[in-house]
Amino acid sequence: MAMLKEKASEIARSLDRAVKSRRGRDVLLYLLFVAVAFVFWLLLSLDTEVQRDFEVPVEMQDVPDSITVIGKFPTDFSVSVRGKDSQLLRFLWGKMPVMKFKWDEQSEENVIYMSRAKIDSRFRDYFGNAIQIMSFKPDSIKLNYSTLPGKRVALAIDADIHPHPQYIISGPMTANIDSVNVYAVGDVPHSLTRVVTEPIVKSGLKDTTRYEVRIKPVNGMRIIPDRVIVTVPVEPLISRKQLISVEVVNVPDDKNIITFPSKVEISYLVPMSDYNNDYPLKAYADFRSIKPGRNKLGLSLSVIPDLYRNVSFSPDSVEYIIEQLVANPQ
Image (cartoon, rainbow, N blue to C red; front, side):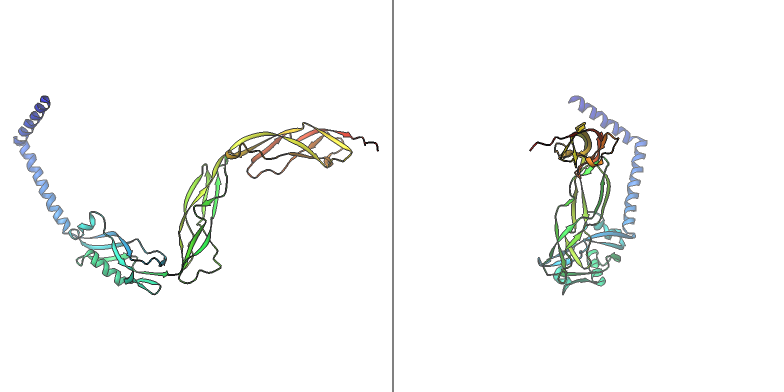
């Protein structure tokens, strides 16, 4: 502790000597002039007239619960203003205050209408009369609204999605909701029975993926919600082999046929979740395809489950022996 105090005292003495030296006084005088120049520059800057752009947040208040606006009321206005920085200082620092509109002051029968003049007047109140409003977007607002209940319609997914070659889409693509509410100023047409998402086009997927996607708008109507989460289930494909029996069809009643081998090996790729599930598979040969002088029968597979990929089997033909059955004496 004593050592720290001694070092601090030594540093203080060094600084005191530096300040009292001729060079130290020159440095202090230079810094003083820099500070004074900065203050003058700041005052001149604040008194200079400039044009600045602001994003002004807006909010519609006191909207009745029975009202559904067809379209969307803007969440902010892009405003360009001209004035002195000293007058704009409170907007440059900190959060922009919300400009609030009251529902009953803006709505008419089934319409919200705010003219350019009305919005301009509100901005003059917002920024102050000394500030010149140059432009703003949107420059007017006209939205329909409805007091009618919405119609529930089905949601369809528009998707063109392809997994990586060693992967598979292992189930149906699903949205977090299966239906939405549709609102209109009048009755929703009976012909509208479903709405569709915006197209999802992806390729090379290697894992289950979720996409936030908009619902395609319907002219003159509002869809709630207007976005959904679509889940695409993806699994890796696992290589699997198994032995399956050879069965000969169309064998005459008085004959028997024995094949060599009696089983063949089938190879395929299967989704990981189905690896331990066995589906009945057989290799078939047709007795009627036997040709004189040939001792082999070609094989074909039974119906293959859709989830199997790259199916192959070996051998693709078998040798055979035909036995004549002896009729039982009556």
